[in-house]
Length: 555
Image (cartoon, rainbow, N blue to C red; front, side, top):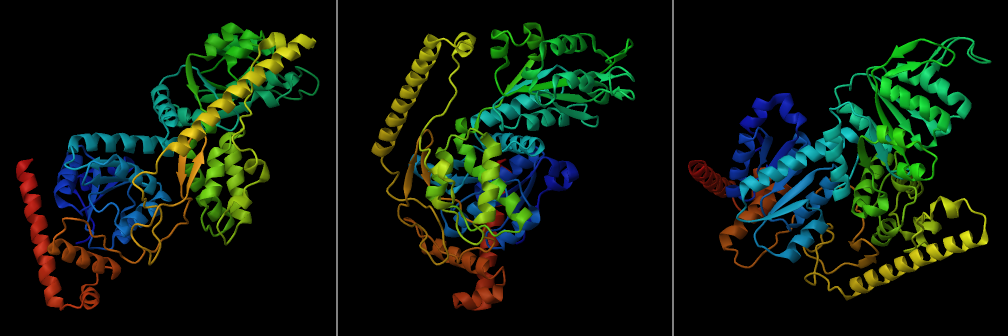
């Protein structure tokens, strides 16, 4: 039985693919059939795959966005499959046979995005899958990678603000991806086919800034040999992105405010007003309110820019996204530089997660590129991490705002006050760090065992792997394994309560997987005749058909 597209997939055509494909592995037929029918009713493109076929080959052909495993979640082949699909950004959802918080934790650590206990409430699963498909679509369009609550909030806000024309202010530290968000707002808006013009106003000298923004007439100043269109005119009917808007000098702020209010520009040296239809998206790496409080930025311009606000959190506030980002950058740079990737050790990954990342995602991206190039042909270990990161430990080098009076004062008492404030904040952070480490050391390991890695020839459930405490993040278990396109030798996991018929069926399925669906080779591997194997498969197909008929009648 090969991978079968459903009616929803055929009806949806290109539209179905645009919203993502959901593949359902028919390990447990009853919930698989109910879920497939419910997703079909919602217009979701689905494909059903038999576990007795070449699952990886079918998935390569289907290229799903979400995979649902309906049983045997800790089977060695399934664990290896989940880890493999992490590299393809495929979200794997699993149905568990028992309600066990420790088991759910183990499955999340293996790589499952969600787990649902049986009997599953299909409507809830469908709603969850639809929300996930929408998030994955937004992530693909915006380039923002992450599963943290902070990134989810950003994606939702971007989708909400994109269709309107109001000005947007994006706040976040350098390297957090502010221009990605600005481009996403433009790409999701009705202006998507129009110009997107980006200007780093902080990099332009004051003497040239007005000319760059508003344009100039011929002879307006020395060197103005011809008329030049400004960025506002170039972005007409599109979007203008003003990066580091807090660095605009006061004189230019007045003119910018007038353009935003009147929707027209006057070139430098000119007298004619030129109407423009531009959506302005501004960004700053420091809260613009602070510039206003210090008197460096006009309050009225701040209110005009801050109609819609998006805050991008620093990387240290979404540490759970670091492994996802590392995988993405490894994939990118391995292909770019033609370098083989052989994994990242657990202690190396713990160092990356624990580091404060003052340069945020940009700094992480550059570091991963360096590691991929320099650690060619071997696993990336802790010694491959730069010394500055290894020795930083849990130090928090965060800026402490002390207000314009202290910052601008050269008096001794001002410097003393700043020193006292910084020392108190540092002490508070150290106390919090100590409390977290004590909590981690006192926390028992879940279940006493954990499925961390599945290696060829190894047991399906190895013992407890190394557990590394990471401040502010929790426990990091295992590193990042390299991509493995070849499935491991099949291991059958026997559980309590399994009948001989269950074991026999699992053995047949395993043999068919190992032989790529070749029934003659599978029969030889099992030591039975081909006719016996055919008869068994007919029985299984009859059971699946009967279950499917029952489910349709109940629906």
